[in-house]
Image (cartoon, rainbow, N blue to C red; front, side, top):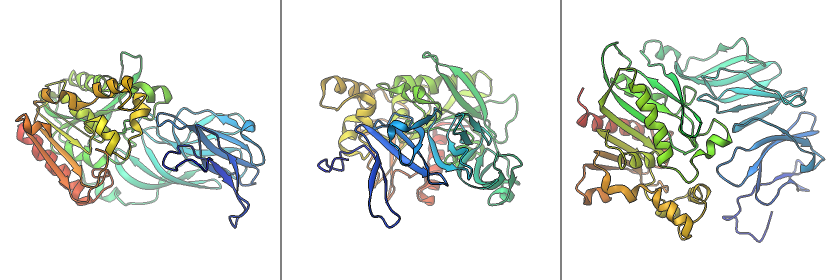
Length: 432
């Protein structure tokens, strides 16, 4: 830790040990260019579990253990190529439990600290947002396609699971839901891309349906049946008679470090190819009306929506929420500005990076946008109108007090308003 460095410039993080009253504080893990986080003492107090990585945003931290009286040189890495969270030791110190987003789900795992073997304990198609472990009992919150949230309990191996709450169960039992169907393809980089297709709730074989291509942000987020923030939106669109196609293009989390880095210096062309290929393949099943397509997404996906409609004219309407459209001004105004040097290798004033940043900014291609476009933004969102000057069909909606969480965990009334406005806008241009 450098006391002379301005805290706004420090990206490293360290782990300290201190007496219970906060005295005699001592750094036990820390290094230039590295992060150390998620410390968890073993029950005996002899071992420390922690995670470590680089200061880059495009990184999967490693899980490791070391003797509490040791040094980083004594650390033992427990390999697992996913972002891990909520570390917990078992009482006998044989296992460390954690949850991790992976391939559209977020299961609970445990790793044997001696053999380094990682076991998946809960379903790959569900997401565990939080859990606790005591003796031979697990209690956790689960999201799945059939239910957005319920509490479950099981034994410590994840077996004999039972639902112990009915927050949504009774209400859901009287509703007709759409179940996502998982598909895959291999892109031109040799990466396996996963995507899901959700049919309209009242689907009838032989009919064709309008379709919404829904894209996630991040760009390192991950969607799938185990991801909770979009459950309501996906079901709303399918209830309105739309097919929903969504997936995880290169650069998404949940697929390891190489996949995560698949969009370095390429926020536009490569991910666009992945999401449009998902849509193209889904359309081959015959129930998608390719003359009635819409596209939507938020944050990085707001960026990608703008990129797509400035390079492709297939969509009848488009919606972007909380997006970034000019990477140079985003660097100067946004509170996530470090995404720029992390993904594009430099700053807007550096010659090499400047060319990449300009090339990757949708604003450079705005004259090519002819798709009717609605843009949502929160007035307190610091992560982000040329179309009106060009005489294009565009609407801008600003939500008072809205933040970057506008469409995810923000004000419920604003979230509902955004969904209703989006559907109304799509249906102006898509008759069905």
